[in-house]
Length: 199
Length: 199
Image 1 (tube, rainbow over the protein chains, first blue to last red):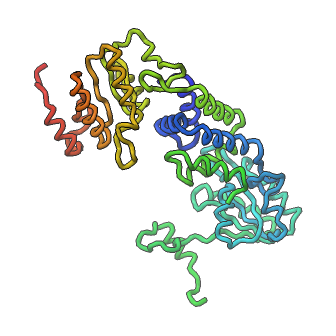
Image 2 (image 1 turned 120 degrees about the vertical axis):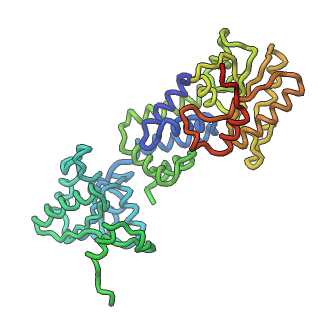
Image 3 (image 1 turned 90 degrees about the vertical axis):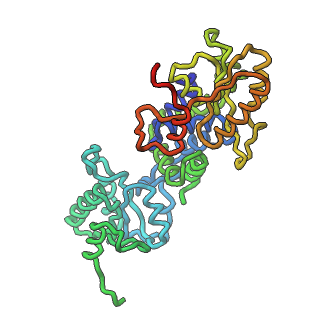
């Protein structure tokens, strides 16, 4: 519907995840009318990320060097590995400041419908780290959904068979939440996982 | 929270309209993991639009030349001008195939809260076209919302005072809609604008 260059841009933007045809059109017109320097910065940011950012050779987290800043940090405890699905989960856990070990990024979760099995995840690399390092605990922090739970179960069985301590993040009521509005699965998990109320 | 280049990209993406912090993060990781050639095409599409696409000197529509393909087309009737807010509205009207005249793109609508008055719109350029061309009708096709109606009223008064025929797109029930679910303002407009049911 538009002349060449504008339509090309709408098509390219429409290929991005979560950007429908209407959003692609709105973004294209924003780009068209925006300040030239702002758009140069956007283009430079995309180009720089593609040129400079790699994945850590140890944990798979995003990194501008061969290994990421967490794997390079000697103050991080090498005996505990927190397994997450994506790099953004590393950021979420780091924000809690509750974890001082290292990470392993799987690059997704087991999802047979999308054709993602254990071989498509960085599980071989995780096993490799267990030979090298003095790892005593693996904390599985995959998402509390169907795919994350399947991945967690798979990893737990595999790692327990080679005699390593495997834990899973607690499920239960979100802090600040309302019991009345908790879904029944979450509330059921909160009952299963109940603890002594005295210290 | 992320290393330099990734955070820079999240920041730049977050400046785009309708892209919140979570979407910016998801898009940045998509770009990071995407095929390099796909991202080169995206960057090229942005760069090409910024370099090549201009606004038609006559009507203000987007164009890769000094004048747009509609203003250059000798088959389009120069005696009727359809006034719209944005270039995307030109595309919407073209899709109907019901209009064979020319356009004038205002570049927005009157919106005092956003600091957009008549002087910020391409109204002077519209008046300039009325001197040159043999225009006999102006069809106002601004959006049927508060800003669009204000712009329509302003234009209609100004153009009528210089003795030109000014019409406005009909308001009423959307085709395929359900009377029961029409809002009261739309239904009221449909009553006001009722026509003879016989031919």
